[in-house]
Image (cartoon, rainbow, N blue to C red):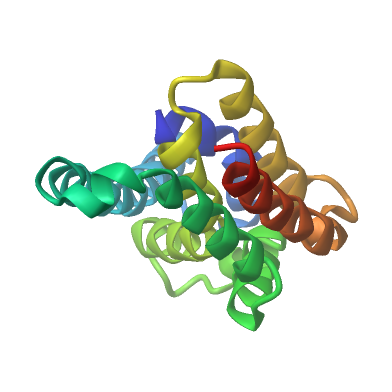
Length: 182
């Protein structure tokens, strides 16, 4: 699921990578190595999220207080995602995701290393939104589509990075609404 959501946002990077490569390697080999490394980073993130989700389910099933107050899980994820939208680290990672050219200009790096570094910056940019998706959106196709659109707009649409504060406020408001109406 993560790869289906995140690979489309790498299209500009793949085009840039092919256009700036000065080696004699075939374009498909360069892009394949890049995609494999990018997918490896997101797979590691998905594994960590799965372990965290398993731990939370264990706690809900074995701790009565947590079981009675499980609504706080989605609320906490929304508040964390909302607050993260204003962090300097999010800004830095989003900038690296939005501007693929500096990644490609370093010709001494392999396509694998470029894919790994680009994947890390994309995870750094999108991890909080992904956790919200895991926490409250997996059973709702509309929420998956909306959260995917949020990540795609932030990364790919000109001026999309200026939506960060609005997205942050929306997540914080959603967190409040989850508490009020739960």
